Length: 275
Image (cartoon, rainbow, N blue to C red):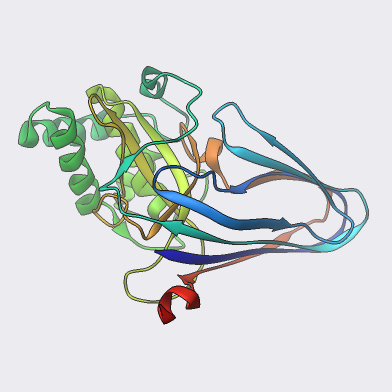
């Protein structure tokens, strides 16, 4: 599948910002399930970009804008060819052994309720890792109702489970917090999703998890949708939780209150549609 992606982030401030510094994880790497045909990050006028990598092997751009500004617009766009691999992820940049992803993280730490959910899934599916991960995905999907606007970037897995609502980030954190105590190495993935209902415009990117299964390697689990990733998914960054794979993180000097607007468009290429 040939996908076109456009991701625009707009900030507006009550008063001028004197300096902005942001870390961007917005550029996908190729792997055996996706080929990046073209991709660009367009910073605001006057800003500089320094390209590099983080410890997880994610492509990172550091944006610096050192002049007064009361608004900032960041644009990312590109074209990616994807194929369905039944959720199995190969050909990736790996910096850590799978056991590294057994450690808890600030947004995906397990409390008693999360351990109870994990053990219930294990009771149903047994301890075979692949079957257990599938059961856990469906359990999380059933416990967290998708409802935007009621959680935020710092919402923990425990808070999301207690509320019973959230977005894909929350589904993923709950999945991670349950998987790791069961001995399943699990990590957070940020990226994009072509919506199954045909809608193109979205208010955010997407998130899901990957679990390491002996004999298969890393396998994706999209608990928000109750499926393994397909050719509709574009994988961008990984980490222990959202903080490691966030599309945009940063700081600024000045500016007062901030208004943020994000518009993501994911659609099929016209070239493909005509073929």
